[in-house]
Amino acid sequence: MIMSSDANNVMKKLLQRISNHVLNLNEFNDIEKIDIFFAFSSKHKTAMCDWVYGMKIKTDLDNSKRNLKIRDLQQAIKKRTDHMFQQIVCCTDVIFE
Image 1 (cartoon, helix red, strand yellow):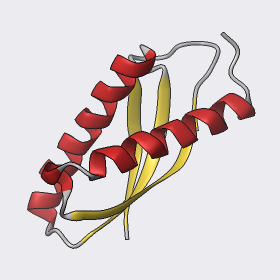
Image 2 (spheres, one colour; image 1 turned 90 degrees about the vertical axis):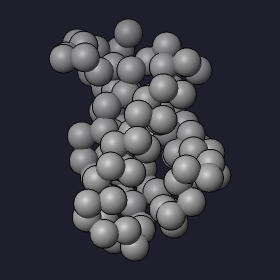
Image 3 (cartoon, rainbow, N blue to C red; image 1 turned 45 degrees about the vertical axis):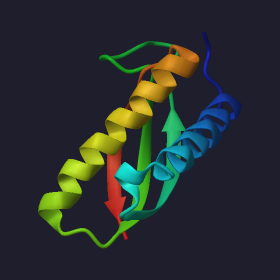
Image 4 (tube, rainbow, N blue to C red; image 1 turned 90 degrees about the horizontal axis):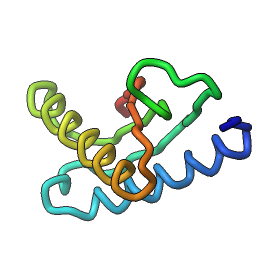
């Protein structure tokens, strides 16, 4: 499978939709906003991920609670993409606003 910039943009949009859906769950009501700022893959699979992505998160949580919440958020996104597309995604960059 050859990945193009078009495919990367499609996956970025899909990950944005999935993350917006996850934010509607009560579990993540203390996260205000998520922006997926990149998603890409390669024709050569590396490590354990089909896709890698980065997200910018807006939240007022303190560091100790924030780290646990973001881990749970990443797992929720990963679970949904695996179920929907049979693609494994890995978040490699997290930026906080």
